[in-house]
Length: 219
Image 1 (cartoon, rainbow, N blue to C red):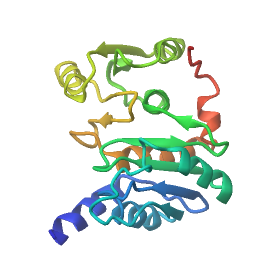
Image 2 (image 1 turned 30 degrees about the horizontal axis):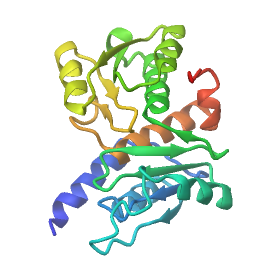
Image 3 (image 1 turned 90 degrees about the horizontal axis):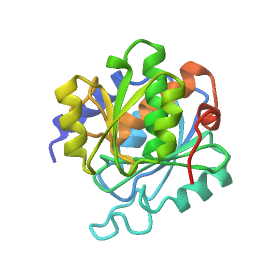
């Protein structure tokens, strides 16, 4: 148990967040590596945190829970009337999201929200992000409407990061919810991604569903 490393990691995450007082946030930790840290981080930022699937026993990781089985979080968000729900996978490098209406957000939705936000603050190099061939075509069209280009790679976060590093891009990811925000980290980090989504909600004073009002998903 490398306690010092864990504490340093959580301190880093907290330093990258914004105050979340007044927000009710649900977390599905997939009985995995985020089971303890995610709650501590969001509570440290002032959020009212409600957690499910945070009792790992060595066998139940990703077992009908987490970002790969997100229905239980959707029910939880609606039942508790939460502002937003975040789900991680077992090793917490990916995340999923449930808005206040119970809609599921994929990595495409998360990329759109982050790209638009960073562009508004002048923090999106070349006004370009990176996605894969698995992304919904609506992501590319929705980004085009707001002046953002989407470079497309083969499936795999290594290809996404390779394109980002080669061209100096700072936002990239996969539809599965593996998002890389290289301004803050060199790899995908589900907790970090969720902190930034919460930051967008707070700074823009909008509900999660409202952040996607201009996103047109294709069949």
